[in-house]
Image 1 (cartoon, rainbow, N blue to C red):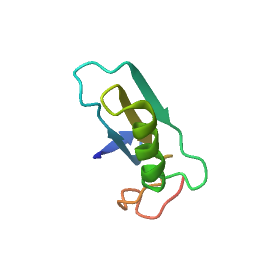
Image 2: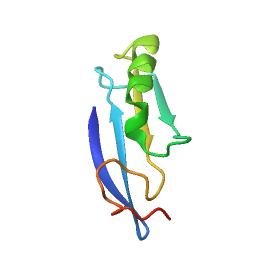
Image 3: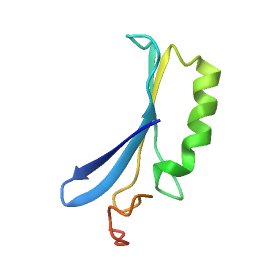
Length: 79
């Protein structure tokens, strides 16, 4: 997994994903978190998607809801 801290306006959040092993993916998937709204909760789901589609063919990314992150970027403030 790769992870990245992002600023979306005044809100801190994080993104994470799995990059495909080939240079050009056939498919790009965006996982939109439900409840809970941080992307780290969905890492096992993302791994299963990678296995289902074949990791060499797909990029998978998730973005946490603003203020929902596992890295403490929001300092406990949910907006």
